[in-house]
Length: 223
Length: 59
Picture (tube, each protein chain N blue to C red):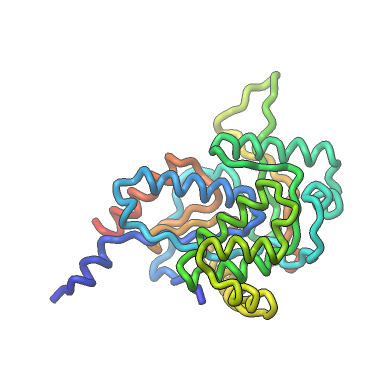
């Protein structure tokens, strides 16, 4: 006999997304995916879940300008780095997203641990998006603990619990587990999106492609 | 703790190239191709890779 709960569970679609805060294509892809979900007739039956993926675990905890990071790390000429950043900024503008070329960069482990905390409170996706809005909006204090606490509090997270996470290594295992899970699933890049545990999307695609993938996954899961 | 469920069957990947991504192994992010006055951008053109973020630890 099929219970009411079973019926409810069978008519939903879970979308899992792996991303890092500082990943420009994650920032754009998440926006496009959100738009695609909002346009979908199944919007109310889709569960969106964020997973963390730290792109540069070896990054210093020092906060430096992104263009300086590029120059130091890869030897990119400042003008070349700025030109490439501006092309991504144009893409972001097309999505209505702020994208400041002159923004800070640093190690993201603390941020990602807080996203994991957010997941435990049901606001992981919103927390990541709020951090990205600060960062890509060009807030030089985007990595500051006071900023992360302020953003978390706006989402209803207890400030004391955020401070406790920041003062410890809590959720570091969860960040590593998410990273390993993405690789085990065959992810070769982020953002990495999995729909209905069956359909994978490596990288950021168009709203139209996300919509098509949602329809395809919905048919597979609920068809 | 947020753990991903591993699918019971291999993932099917959607057709087509992504518009952009950051490489999971190297941390390198792609960037949109620069527009050129001499050669209009082909729809098949792939984004040029750019050293952006790198995972020093490797996969």
